[in-house]
Image (cartoon, rainbow, N blue to C red; front, side):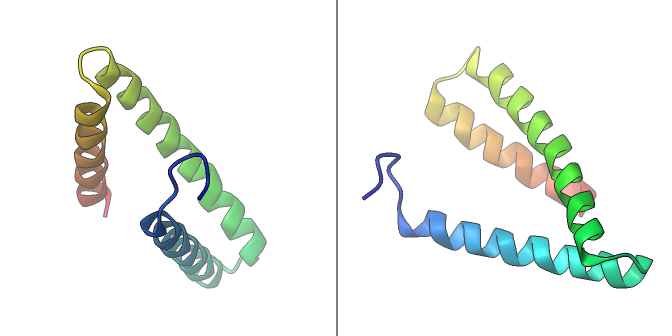
Length: 86
């Protein structure tokens, strides 16, 4: 077992993430007539913006909440963001 506390759900999550990323890039590539590489770069750039916002939100949560509560609220925030942006 890895030192980080790895479990099988993490691997499943990474696999689903990779499938979603590829699927989104492929769709964008076809819709916009751009290469899959360019579409993938665009998707990763957009994810970096989201990750920065996620990290900022987590830092703010950690100022007032224990780690477990902050992580729960972060997941809730990410779910709400997904619902708003679809």
